[in-house]
Image (cartoon, rainbow, N blue to C red; front, side, top):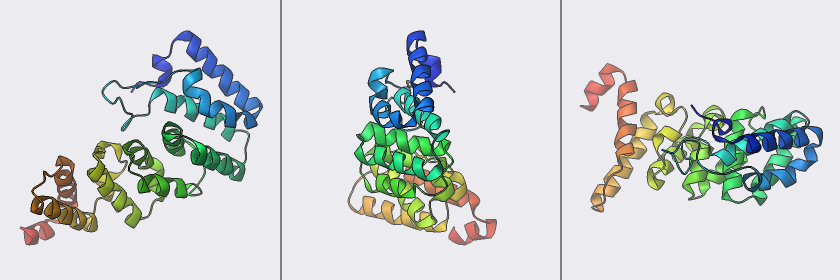
Length: 215
């Protein structure tokens, strides 16, 4: 899989290294450098097939993640959580997305779950996709996770963006999806293919006896 460093030119790579060194030396610079990272270094898709960065981080996400990882080396956990929360709360959608992507790469426990919940309450597909990474797979409770997955279906976020969907899909999620499909059909509206895919995932995990009963 390609990374931002693979697509950055020599000048941009040098500048990124300088910014990481700057944050490592003086972590308080994070508040200034993080918002400006896309303008300072570059922005755009790492994977041209995923231009909106729903499945893979964009260049500006990876640049910002690099800055946060540099800050992690200098801040203690509680300080870093405060800094990241501020970056998220005051950031635009792209900055929020980078924060959510970064959670998979930082050792913060469940302290920043409120940011994941906030993103899942939004209707921004970029934030919803970024919120359902490894961090959410590890720390989000079943109820919130199921609703997050169903929101992906509502908003057109591909299931491939959801880490752990094959492992966590269960009978309750299947029930929710069945209800959603019934509502769509009753309204004469098309059913997203990923809704059927979720039902298939639960069916694949069900014991053979349970499948026979359902049939």
